[in-house]
Amino acid sequence: MNGTEITVSICCITYNHEKFIAQAIDNFVRQQTNFKFEIIIGDDCSTDNTLFIINQFSVKYPGKIKVFTSPENIGFHRNFIRCVEACKGTYIALCEGDDYWTDNYKLQKQVDFLKSNPGYVMCCHYTRVITADNQTIYAHPRPVPLTHTYHDLLAGKQDETKTATVLYRNLPIVHSLFLSKLFFNCYAGDKIFKLYATFHTGKKVYVMPEVMSCYRNHQGGIWSMINANTRMKRMISDFDLIIRNFSYPRLLRRKLLGLYIKRYLFFELSNLQIKRAYNTIKYLL
Image (cartoon, rainbow, N blue to C red):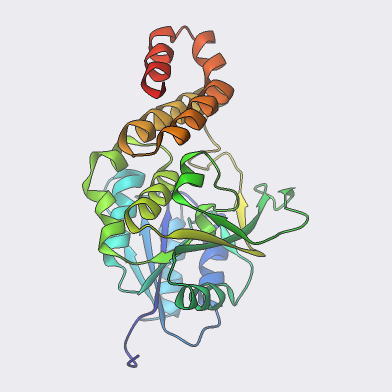
């Protein structure tokens, strides 16, 4: 490796995170590594002091942080894409502006793993779920190593792979997702991304048995701010996209049918979405 090569690009998208963004960036710059890393931040036209705080860090750490802004809100998908396209690293680490890392050696550990394990496209780890005032909602009591294959993810198994835990290989085939309508039509972009990455590379996702980040569940969160009814509708919409845009064997098709019946069928019938429920079941039979 030459002295100018970037090993990891930290990709952070943010919007109105003035209460949290400083903690996120502070933990980025605290990372202890034997390689170079850069920090790419995309602020989606925040209306609070988020951008001001980001610029303060940019001045404090010249050449370390690259900031993207826009005169108007461009939305999660385009904000994420412009940041990823700017990443020069061999690997990309993800963390949204309202979450943060808790281990100063997180990047080093994950890079070491992926370097030694070519059969994996992504490395994640356990995370602690907290409130806006840092009260713990959830933390796994006994973390163990996990491996998720494409088929695991397709069947809904994605334990301990929240966005702030992800470090993945910066590969063109993985980023080809952003050229498709699939990414722009989904709500849970992180879930589609993990599926796409494992499907098109044939590689797996590894979860390290360590808690190295915190995920904030708060009213300003992209996902947590919406009500339960809307959240369920979006989950069903994404499920429909997934079953129609990814390939899978017949045995897994039956598992997906069981998953639909268990998680979504009652909600669909209760909301008189009988035709849509019929079409989904028919498709999976």
